[in-house]
Length: 335
Ligand code: FBP
Image (tube, rainbow, N blue to C red; front, side, top):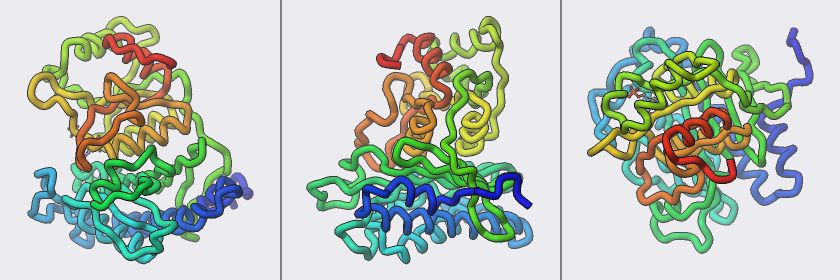
């Protein structure tokens, strides 16, 4: 029935890449299986969302002061419950909870999970693409006394992933130098991929940003946007879904750049959170030959100061991010 019968699964990918790393193989397999199961659950709930009356607001605000949607809560409980049952997770940091939660686990081999259980919340009630984002870290050595300290001292992500709930449900995994794309078969519940690494197309022509904020941006960014629209040859096209996972996924497949810059003056840190939005996308981009910056430095070199720290995010095809950096006066060395 399928175009390519020799599809691979996330299990095959992790097994293939951990042949010389038995210690982390089991926790990585258990955590990836939890993400897959959570993806199946969320995809099936989302398909019936309006009928179940779960696409509205939960009438509360989260630690970020943002309105919480019912599906934000369902996503939080679904993934937290699965990570707890995996007994492979030492602590979970989530957009929906002020402090990281410590879970019962086998402390010697367990890992850290940072997550945005439901990304693109403003798209839920209008049936537009949304997602879930994860980064898996090794606990710092020596370990930290506080759950917060575990995440603030963790090194770069070991594995990063996102689920995209849209026309079909995609699971994208970055691990051990590769990024792979899988699609959920709703009949068998399997996530299947063609077993080969995905690379960002070098030459992209799509830019994704909320242009309504342009007047609030620094002058060099305003000039950059005017240049790509009026002078750049070839010109670029604007596509913006309003969900990081949706915009990133399109640009990963077609070639493009996503920008959520800082605003000039008071709100200088942008909107997106470093540990569970910018970092995972930067890791997935890096393993697919792309790159992510905060406008000045590589996102993967930023040492977090707080667990819900926000950063500006510029991510996409290398040639487009390099061009952005040069035209805004922050050329990146070594790019
Ligand atoms: P949430 O995780 O709270 O949904 O916020 C992040 C996000 O929705 C991104 O997915 C998206 O790219 C951006 O905010 C949209 O922001 P804006 O509505 O300001 O354009």
